[in-house]
Image (cartoon, rainbow, N blue to C red; front, side):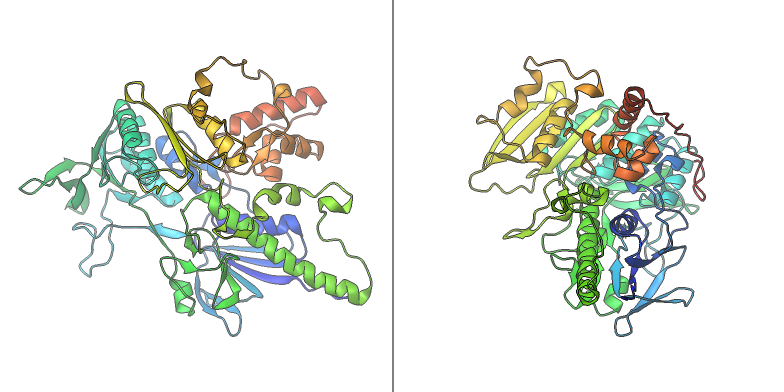
Length: 552
């Protein structure tokens, strides 16, 4: 008889990436791991990507919560902060003094908002300080504070013109505030968009009530009575610059990976926690880092899809270690033991394998891990459609064999660029045309061959074409419904056949709707169609607000 001892996993961080790892591990095996999760926030996991939707009033706080993975072998401790790691004893100590032993440690500590070293944002000791009316947008509490602050002022300044800055500025303008977006780049989102595309985006923001001030640098946050009253910007001209009056200042100037606990434990850190392609620290193969805090060889973009890719790959690796151990035990006991059902085993693969194969099986190449599909950036700003992926933005360095074609239509509020190489789409930018953006995203993520003349990538949506499908029945089974998680119509149909009877059931089984949320309507439509065509009763999708998440 072989005694089964679960592998002890301690996960530091209960955010979108840490909780996803736990979900991945439990989906692979409910009893192979004994998992302890330490989360500093008091809430269950929530979708940080949708915080800007909360600010805009498009999404309620309760709607962004994510299922907390539970079970006999999962212990989640909220409002518990890990303070030290003892790599010799293989333990983690929390802020209450409790000690948590591990076989493998996963750091999913995320990142914190970067606060610019400006007058008005520093205490007397020189530490970062946010006076009343100044907020970063990084946590659920931040979003609540910004919404509350928007009720007591008519003017707001958003500092930082990246994706989050654009979304926040648009959202506050939608609430009726006079908003100014301040950015040092020549145009908004200069990391993802070149100058021409950024100019089209800036014009779209202006049309929706946002004043865009590009190419200027904030020099001071003006404070009176402990509260912000404006932002001084350096316009490059002589004098003291220009003052933008504001009772609400939102900082969206990037993030800083949380590396302190790793550095204190003697693990290599740079901008983030240094890891290899396998996400393990080169100094300790039992310690891993995933998500925003990690610095793999290929770099990090800070996108949630990238963090979820880390979680899938690491869960696959840890599961393989358990499988190897079980194989050794099986050989010793001469007794078969099932772990996962793979396609070659003659049975239908388990759901964990079907959903994890696309990203979990990525292998290193000469250029590192192929992360195409995890670098699609989509802005959530109402009718302003902005999508960027792969080779794009002002930092793009053309490579031999690449060919770029573009359609610039500033008067029509549209800019499209496609970059192709080797018969595939390797990068794209699309502003102001959601249909083209959807086609380009599908071609990029699915690696479908492009036309010999890549100009057709820009023109196809305006050419005569068949009417779009009026029923899910006409959708091909491999049509991707949720691009954040790679969930197809077939995956949703399969989980319905396995017993899912509501949108929440489908989300729990496939994770559809848990990313940017843009596929929710399509998933609901598929659920309604399946219920109508297969005669199943659908449970109402009425979700009470989860514990700890009150309505804003």
